Amino acid sequence: MFTSEQVAQFSEEGFVLYPHFLSDGDLGRFHSSIQEVTAGSTLAEHDEMRMEMEPQQEPGGELVRRLYEPCTHYEAFRAFSESDSLLSFVEQLFGPDLFFHYSKINMKPPGIGSPVEWHQDLSYYPLTNRDSVSILFYLDDTTIENGCLQVIPRKHTAPLLDHSTQGFFRGKVTTKVDESQAVPLEGAAGTAIFMNAMTPHSSITNTSKQPRRTLILSYRAADAFPVYTGEMTHLTEQHSRLVRGGLAAKARFSMNEFPVPLYESRIASLYDLQERSRQEDAQA
Image (tube, rainbow, N blue to C red; front, top):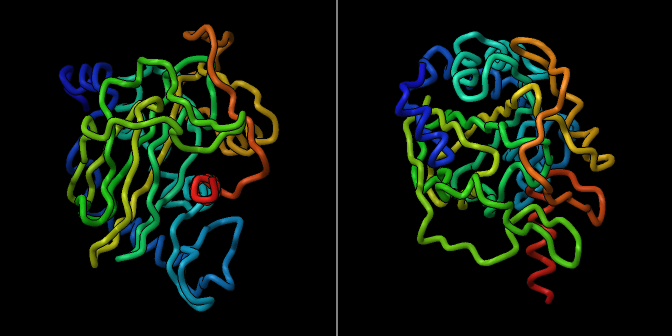
């Protein structure tokens, strides 16, 4: 369980790092499941509903950069997402009534792993309040060299940074980011990072010879209801479910207003949206 100091850090800094959260047994099960799920997948032939491949490889290349919704599709991850041991930590942050929101596994293969630019998770899925957490579990030893998470502390209580240009959502912060404030979060395999969904964060390209796989789960307070934004709301909500406590009879509002992401066209993922934005920036 969190100490009172760790709960205070999450509240004040917008994140808390918890070493050795996953056991060797957890890591072994997750590694085996990933290997089983991705076996035989190539850039040319893969299940586009379940995974996304690194685009910069030959058609027969087998480098995967994301698995979609492992906690819905695969038992090892589903069981973990609903485990009392994990939910007890989330309850310390938001209380006893909790929704699971979404899950993914981001993978940065050696020397090629795609970067993730600065963004805030809540920009993608506005809620009626900010009680939402993204939990990142390092499945490999993770350093600056192989693309660890970096965050900007104490920004989670401020207004959302601008993520749009020309009226359309770009999936990344579109104003200048003071990277001198960034804190890299390195950790051994099994480390967990609990991050408020308003905390600005990014990760760089994996320039090492070591892989970097990260399991990401999102939870929210049951009274944090989605703000309807059209098709994307349906896509982000289709895997959400109550995992502890009871349903909320009322939505709790903690903000007078919040930016709504307006999409110029349908996207496949964060990577896709940010890449389109980079291409537009280069052409400008």
